[in-house]
Image 1 (cartoon, rainbow over the protein chains, first blue to last red):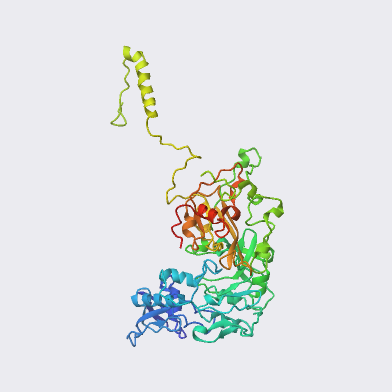
Image 2 (image 1 turned 45 degrees about the vertical axis):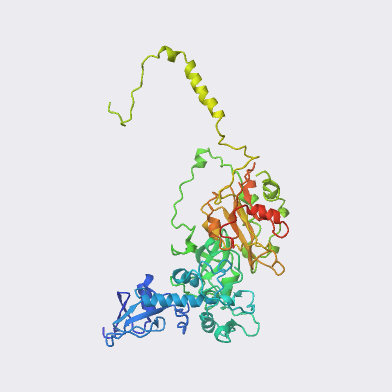
Length: 386
Length: 183
């Protein structure tokens, strides 16, 4: 065993682990897992060169190495600092780190519009999680938040520049996944923005991956825009044989009822995609028939997406049919006969882009008028006497 | 037999006395109690004509709020639906078209919004969850209905009257006590 590599011993938050030389502190901490792993907004394992921009992964190095046990003078970005043998790192056990991270989150949120109620990323947003954990309730910023001219990025991708935190992930993704990058960062400092310079739509057949790579809601799926909140959808793992050479075909389908509302690549526990998918899989294949279903996606119990999703439920046997001598129980009301939500004849997932008022014809067109039974209690005088 | 509690009483099986056998005094005693109540203050009110004042925290029929310019506040963020323990609320969002800025406050709005009043338990968690001050529970009882279909309340039933075109109806629907979260 002469070629056995020497492993470095690192201690992170009093937990010692042996990792290969050249591993970053962040990846060593992720090997331990749990709360020890620092949050990362810009670092992305599969994208070369990413990291070092957002500063949320700052950690304190209490001892540099066995050979030189002096502490590092400043907090270091754990995604860009490699481990040394005998290094002692403090993450959540260090008050300095927690304090610095709170400050970083405040900086990230300075220009963030906090329009989570509108944002499609809400529920699976890294900045939301970060803000929830480290953010302050109020803001100390008194000035107008930066705004941008709206750029149209084509029929698939919706850009919300005000939400961007300048992590550069989408730029690296476009560089490394597509042959020709069509968008980038224009200007600098406070004026820096993601754009295509000349109004141009992003049309490379792998460009959809920048949606998954974006840690916030700056780049979202236009075909899913405003259709539903992610926590009301049921994620299901599926795959298909994609003809695209680079496409893995492994995806997560997001269902409402029988409709596929959205297709995304599969994210691991750190919110990162390992197997990227092509635009055809992502935007064009929104029918169950296109896919081979593998089973429900495992969702962390702490995620809002897991609400209402019960895994391993055993339904009790239906005994009504035996009791009623084979007669079917009489339904007192078919909800679709009166409800205007989730109407069977309107397939929201088939609409390209967000739904508009023109997509819902009035209920009267179906020959139903439930309002004549309920009436507006505010206007019909039902409440006059009270 | 050992009694189960210390307060057990043996049944009195003595024969009734002459006074008790007459029954009349007992009846008179009962009647005097009944008549006595006629001169006491009535604890009830004649409901439809008279109403009791609502408590400031009364949770009645839901209202979908508008802002002072009459634009709908709801952005279909789904927080009320996710907070609802009875799963009574459903909605569908849509994007605001150019020209609808005076109808909807933000770029996303609830194209459909429904509360199943058969399921609703009037707990008020939707009101607490709402980040836009768009839904609150008013000081009104939910009206009764003869059919189940009449209890599926859509936007037509829930939306508050427009404060610009119908300020009186707006004030009435808002009630005496403003919602505590109103800004």
